[in-house]
Image (cartoon, rainbow, N blue to C red):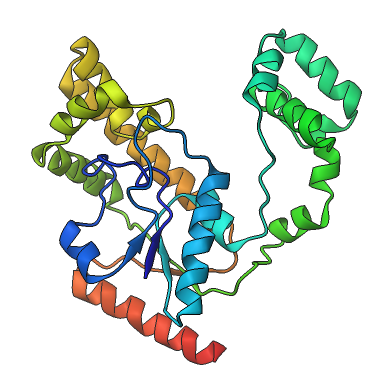
Length: 279
């Protein structure tokens, strides 16, 4: 079974822009965490964790093999590491967001004088979230940061063992990103965005590629400019993902190979070697 940890493949209809595996491929190998909710919906990392862990548990109970694939670091760690997501409350958040940034920051520092060691207090969104967590759980940023769970997360101690592999994108990744986006446009991405635009919620509309093409659909913005922005956003995402996963000492990196068969063969060899070493 394959479990996708792409945070946007959970949305139905967002197929081309998220590079979902084909229907034929999904018929050959069971895939989970794809087409979970409609684009109008919000699907939090906490919800992703709950559904994803259930799918993995079910596969392991039936003695199946699970392969986790994708690039969303938070969603990956939500499945394999002891992350616990604090609750949310729209009413409490709305009340906090109505306050001035200065008042919210002062309230946070009054509740936790060392909060600025753990929270970017210059970021109003993070300040509001910290205050929301205090209101709902009583836990300050310092308390959460110094918990045993937080220490395990920082130390990369998983809740379930796994073998982690990353594929280095190679020197030509920028060129491939551009070619990939052009291929998506040729495959009908703009039509897909046009169809989804009326029903895309706050999270879905922020997906790379969709976010840049929505102004084309809604306001008649220039397609070439939007395409350039989408490619640049893709490269920014690639950089952030690479930085995130490079920090994880459990991930073994494989060099890029232009030849598809050679690339797959190298990965298979390394997986076999690691499996033998850990058996």
